[in-house]
Amino acid sequence: MIGTYTAVDVETTGLDPKTERILEIGAVRVENGKETGVFSRLINPRREISPRITELTGITGEMVENCPEIGQVMEEFLDFCGEGPILGHHVIFDYSFLLRASVNRGLSFRRDGIDTLKLCRKFMPEGEKKNLGAACAYFGIELRNAHRAVSDARAAHLLYGKMAEIFGKEAEEAFLPKPLEYKAKREQPASKRQKDLLRDLLKYHKITLSAQMDDLSRNEISRITDKIISQYGRIRQKR
Image: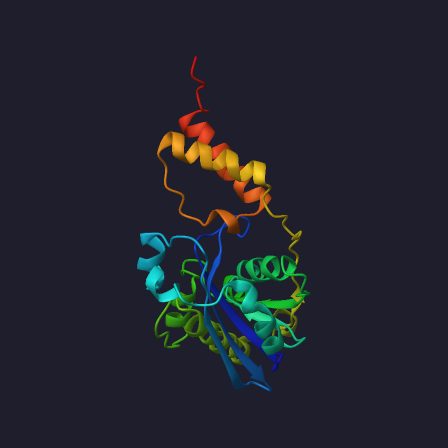
């Protein structure tokens, strides 16, 4: 068992780091097995939060309306993490969002990671559910305020400690950090031509955009434009 790491969790507007945004970052710093610090920030994603995400997390648009954007938070978060490994339940999900946010702001965030979901798949019975809530219940760990970032980060930390206590001696290698493999390129801002085309499509088809136009990257605005054209068609020119 490794005793020093940062347990992390992010809540997001959706599942795809290429198209969705971070809503909340929660982290627990652990040194020599003891919790020594907590990081918790709500993030303004500059887009609407779907009812499904609000139902899951309890986070509403009103809660994040006056919160900082991700660029104002990342340096503070990276300082909190330090250079050590990160830990999480399906940690590659959290890492992919955090890495993309870092790269887009010219920051470095390459880390090794410990994945408690992989440990659950290795050590829990096959028929048992392996999500964080089910795994905590199986090992007798209380999970309060599920799907909020700090609570989930702390639960993953406690889950790791419990499994290491039970299985660590027989499978030490499984509890060590592994390189996290995810590639992210810095996204380019959308061009004026792209924005003008999207504005025209939105007006023509009477569509309300859930994201803020000026905050969209070149790839994001291209995907939205293509989706609108696919669903509603192009703008018909008057004869």
